[in-house]
Image (cartoon, rainbow, N blue to C red; front, side, top):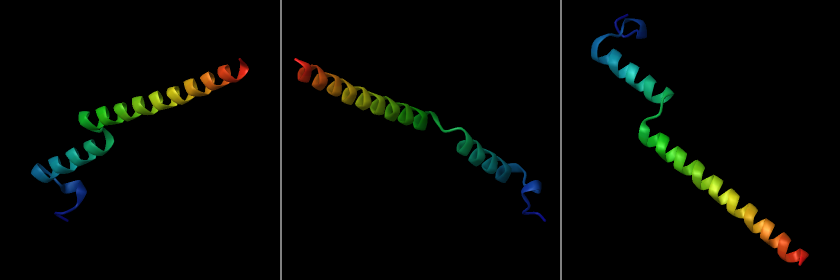
Length: 61
């Protein structure tokens, strides 16, 4: 069973370890993209709520 995951060592073992690490912990670039998306989403949400409040204020005048 030389191809068994249990017996993998050397270069192949490093590749498997790097692949699993990449799946579990995203790289810095992916983390920045995700953070940017979250900020854009929150900014859009905040903007829409501000528009709603302004509309309500205008209607009450």
